[in-house]
Amino acid sequence: MPDDLLQYVIGPTPYSSVWLWTAIGLTLLLGAWYAGVFVLTSRRRRP
Image (cartoon, rainbow, N blue to C red; front, top):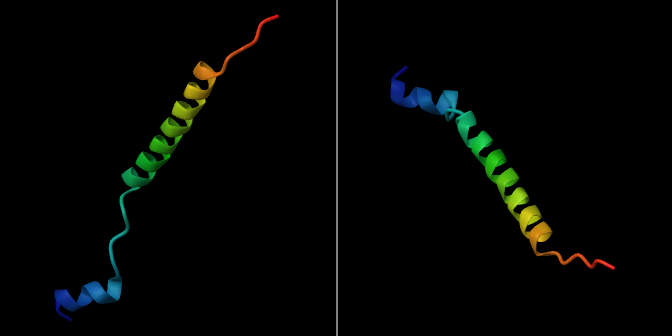
């Protein structure tokens, strides 16, 4: 079987795990950013 037809039988190559860890890291960074903005901009009333 020619190699060009073999790609349809085997399927696409899986994505790299680097993309998964990049997405997880960016999500955590975004959550930390929002938490930091919330903490730094919240006004604490002191009696």
